[in-house]
Each structure stands twice: as structure tokens, then as C-alpha cells.
Image 1 (cartoon, rainbow, N blue to C red):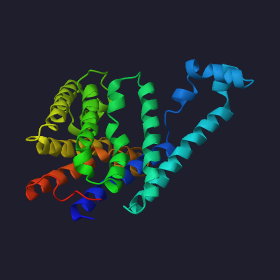
Image 2: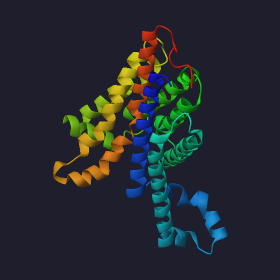
Image 3: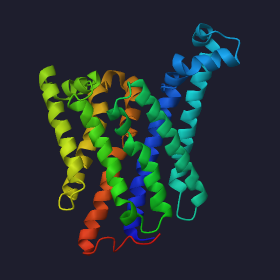
Length: 292
């Protein structure tokens, strides 16, 4: 395997390990929006009352049902931990293990659809997770497809751009601005609320601009530099804004996973940037990364 392909795959592996660890931590120790579906009266009431002897009220107040949902959530957490443990051992010669990446991406896709439902079907909520959903798939094609970068470059760019545009739709106020966005800006920079809102509008506008510039050959590397920087900053902001040194164990437990699950937001752009930098150095696009 070419050295630069190894480098690309290594960064993607780190990205996926951190993503799966973060989501595993969330599901095992905290919560996930499975109740969005399982307690959705319009979707589930007919099934519950048709297939069981329980009324809808009995169902939603049942401790056994609640325990089942909690157990299901933890089971997904264990699955994500399993994915994180297997990813480092994947090579070009272990294609059967690649099914784990497909399964992990599918589970994440289901999670993000539940989050989309929970947030009133805001399109920004759906597309902002494109890169987290796509990171295991990018690793899969990098491991098992020939000439993968040239074949899938636009798909990679689309996943990155969707993620940044999704964030931007909340930051600029197209969707209601999340309160925790404002709180993070205030906690990190000590701004007033109005200044924090102005900062978010500027940041969201830049997200959209660079998401477009990523598809322009002359500006794609500049766009990736912005995305590496801003993706890392917005991920680390979860720790910087919320970590309390006097309650380190508690706040770390609550917020570190929120940072590491966002690793694809800056590591996937970093992997792409290194490819483009090497292509320019080689003087011929795709010269060094054409074989599996």
C-alpha cells in the first residue's frame, strides 16, 4: 500500500474510532432519542393497542417499557464500542470486517434520523451529521476500492459541505439558534448575548462560503484549511466551555464524548487536504493513490 494511502486511512481510522467511542459513551452512559419513535403516539399507538393488552397510557407509563428502551439504548452503546475496537484491525485483506463499518454507519444513520424527527424535521439537523454518517463509509471505500480518491472525491466533498452548511443553518438563524451555541460563545469568549449572536451569524456565513469554495479547484485547499481549523475549534469548544476544574470527573464524563464524536468534522478534511497537497507536489492528480 502506498505511504500516502496509509496516511489517509490512518487518519480515517482515528476519526471513526473517536466517533464510535463518543457515540458509544453517549448511548451507554447517557441517552439517545429512541423514545422519539417508541413513544410517538401517531406511529406506535395502533401497534401497541393492537398487539398487546395495554392501553396507550399504560404503555407510556410502564416501567418495563422504559427499562426496555434504556436497555436498547445501552445495547447500541455496546455495539458502537465494539465498532471502535475493531476499526484499528481493519486492513485491505480483511474485507469481511468491512461489514462492521456498513453496520455502524447504518446505525448512525438511524440515530440521526431520530434526531431529525426530534428536532421538528429541521433539514439542518439532518445534514449536519452527514460527515459522521459518512466517515465509516469513506474508510470502507478507502480500504476496499481501487483508485478510491479520484472516484469518490466529490462524494467526500459533499459530505463535508453538508455538515458545515447544516451547522450554518442554525448559526445564522435559518432554524432557531440553539441556546447551547450562544452559551458556548459566551463562556469561551465572555461576549454579551447580542455579540454572541452576531459571531454565530458571521461563522455560519463563512461555513456556507467555504462549503461552496470546496468545489472550486483553485480554492479547495483553502476551504479545507478553514474546515480543519473551524471543525476542531467547534469540537473542542464543548470541553472549553463546559469543563469545570472543580468538578473535573463529572464534567469530563458529560462533555468529553461530545467532543470526540465530532472528530470527523476536522479529521476527514485533514485527510483530504493531505491528499490534495501530495497531488500538487506530485504534479499529477491521483498519481500516488491509484491502487488498492
